[in-house]
Image 1 (spheres, rainbow, N blue to C red):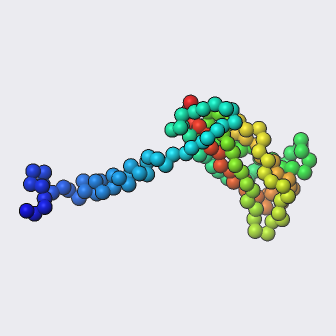
Image 2: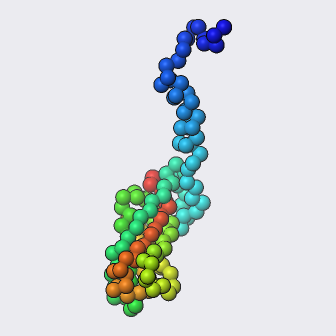
Image 3: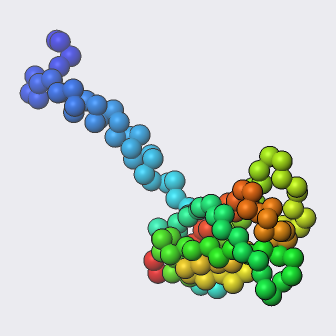
Length: 141
């Protein structure tokens, strides 16, 4: 016997490749979801709707409400969140920039935007300060 099923004949190379890659594709598309344990609004959302969105911002403005602070409004409309997401943010500074005391303060979280505040001077921030942020939330209910 030649090892080839005479009833079906030899499989074309494309079919064999699909058979070999199918388990890999199934592994990559299932079980790799995002789990969000609790949202600040206390509501529950369908797990398949969990999504992660991230970005970088560099447009700083002086705060009129908090002297010595700079702020940035971050637009998250393209993330399509249905409630205010969980946000993590950090400040990335150029190599020779002075360190910034304190940290990034996140305020006014909404479905489509949030604000961050940092201590600093606009002339320093304009030398390349970047806000790197990630937001986890849900894009359906």
